[in-house]
Image (tube, rainbow, N blue to C red):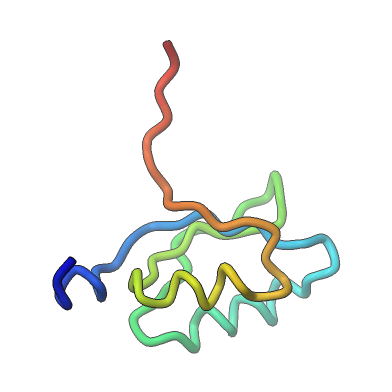
Length: 77
């Protein structure tokens, strides 16, 4: 992987723990260079975000995050 690919913006779905203050977590996302909130979900506590791939582990290891996955198309058989 090249350095250019390391900073590529990717779309992720972040699911937060019930105990997390969603507004405070939004500030955490927005404090990361080139990261942005694309959508806030109503059906569960979480966001669709754009994030440089180099910062994935930062959110993956955040104590407020239940799960984070790359957003991609889901197909059925």
